[in-house]
Amino acid sequence: MFNKILFATTASPTCDDAAKVAFDLAKQYDTVFFIFHVFGIPTRGASPFVTDVRTGREEALDEDYAAWVKEEMKNTYAARLKGMPRAVIDCSAGAPATEILRKAWKENADLIVMGAPTCRQDVGAYRNRQIVGSTMQRVARGAFCPVLIVSRACDTCFGDFQKIVLATDFSRASMAAFKFACRTAKHIGCRLSLFHAIDLSPTRIGQTLSREQIEQRIAGARFRMQAAYVAHMNGFDNFEIEVREGIPYVEILKFAREKSAALIVMAHHTQAVDPEKALAGSTLEQVALRSACPVVSVNRAAKIQPPDASQARIAAEAVR
Image (tube, rainbow, N blue to C red; front, side, top):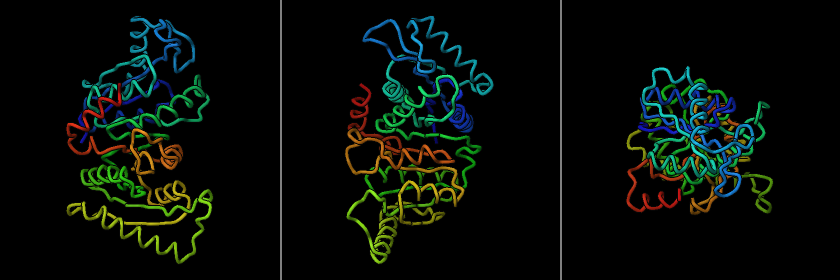
């Protein structure tokens, strides 16, 4: 299912939960596994110094420092690297999101794994939260492959999943998310829950709905899922459809918890706009930060279906 996995890490304890999932997936699928760390942001233009993302200290950018960072990464993951001859440790200096996207495109990665911001108060934790949070959004927006976001410890990986929840808002991006979720459920042989929340957020001023209107929208959403998704399952019948009303991210989290979901799949943004111009949707961000299970953000279908020439050209532009 995955030939190449890119694990984007700060090489610190804040990424331990994501590391477990990433290493488990790499071992299970015997993939080429890239452990990638963007170790610093140049302080000024072509400056020979970088600001280390873990410590916040200014470091001299040279071959010795890069070699030291790689050695530190190797030591950090020494136990997990045993029996993984296809693992490749690499690092780079620059803006984290840009370098991660460039690396993913260069290596033709099928999946990017990264952590979400955490509340741990270890060395550099606050700085990590600021950088990782921004990086998570930018990678989700620009990636041409699914992005697996891990915010908490998870004892399962793809082979052990018993339930996958697809949270859809019927946007164009949600169709790409559906294709990934359906393919994964078929591959694993697990149950797929198609879920939609009628948005009753307090911020939607002037859109107070009566119970009758809510019921009509629920019925309409069920019909749309049958027409848009079930018709494209090609015989896969291990699924269910559920529609609820409320604040979308709250309802998604509640449903995933009720079903003991092991994976939530979502589009990276919630509006049918050009993915290059869209910010990561607040729903995805809130779910990723609060979910007890990993969340997959799917931007486009380029790595779910064979990419055509136009997709390849757009991908090249995305990392320049």
